[in-house]
Image 1 (cartoon, rainbow, N blue to C red):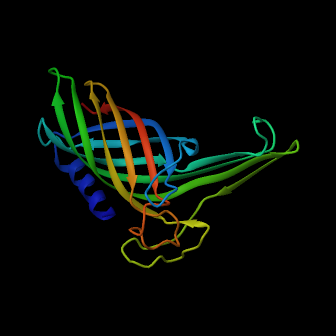
Image 2: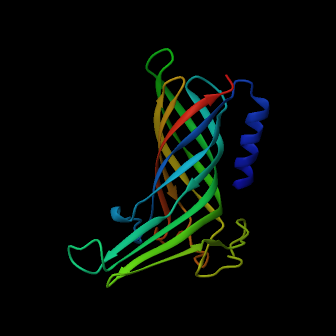
Image 3: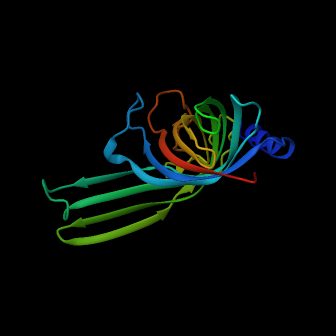
Length: 231
C-alpha cells in the first residue's frame, strides 16, 4: 500500500498540468483507543500538529484525487492526581507523542456554492512511517518533582509480511495504516479542512493481529489550513 500511494502521488505531480499543489498546516487532537470496541477517553487527548504538502490532481470540477506527504503527530497523554481536589501536588503526568510521515490518498467530492467558493468532502486510505517522537513523565510527590524523557523506538519491521520482526513491548510498529475522512471549505486562496484519522493498526510491535479488536489504535482529529501554491 505504501509503495502504491507514493507512486500515485509522484505520477500526479509529474504528469498532470491541472494538478494543484498546496501547503498544509494545522492542529491535531490525538488519542489512542483504550477499549476493545475502540473507545477513547477525552482527558487523554494530546494536542500536536501536522504540516506538509498535498496535491489535487485536477481530474474534474466535482470529483478529484488528493495525495501528498505530511509530517504529523499522534499519541496521547494521561494525568493522575493522588490527592482529591489538588492539582498542584501528588500527581503523575505522562505524554506519549510519536511523529510519522504520512502519505494519504483521498477521493475528493466538491459541492460548489459560488463561482470560486465551495464545500468539499474527502475520504481514503493512508500509510505512515514512524520517524521520531518522545515520551515524557512529570511527577510531584510530597513536594518533590522529577522529570524523565525518552525517545520513542520503532521496530524494524517489514510491513508486507505477517511476522513482526524486531518486536518488543517497548517499541512501536514502524508502519501505520488507516483511513481518513473529512471535509471543509474551498475559499479559493485558502482551504479550511477537518479530518479524522481512523487507525487500523495496533501500534505496539508485539501485537500481530490487528483485527482481534480495536484497542491500542490511533484516533486523530485534525483542523488544518491549506494554501495553494504555483498557480
